[in-house]
Image: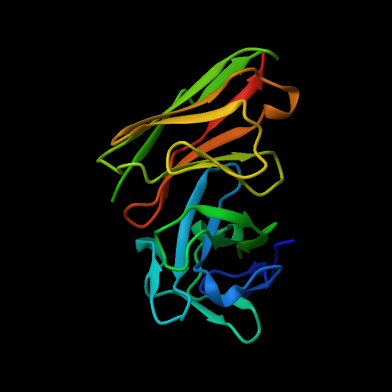
Length: 122
Length: 106
């Protein structure tokens, strides 16, 4: 059974940082691209970032470029998202998502974690 | 960036009804289109990918069609478990989602 377990969310002040983690199990983590999607309270889904199987290729939505960094450790079956210079508009549930394919953009998102809430407020 | 627009934003229907949700892309996405179902407080669940391929385990009352810039999600006979919010998503050029369609009980 595929499982994606996010952690690391919480309350942080504007300008602060957080590191989200996603521990994967039930599939060969090193064979699939991975993604972060977020959902602000009461709002729709927004793609945030994606990473290739090797970790060498990373992609970001414009609003987080230069502030967020996606990475992965295939030896630990873990996906990360480093969030820096946080803003109120980054407040959202952040979902860890498995891609269908081994490369970014060739498949839809077939498994989702339950999400971790990031709240940016003073 | 490719913009995805769903209609309607809210849909009221009854158990047993046939319902259709439309998704339009601002430019062609070929058939690189997926549909997701999300219930309150839960993560989204993949229903359909490549515009019309049913994900494993998804009931056959769900179907998808379309290509290019216009797509539809159809539920042939609405069941109580189907009241939820539905999102379309393109994945030909990075990723973007529609704003969602809330399917509510009439």
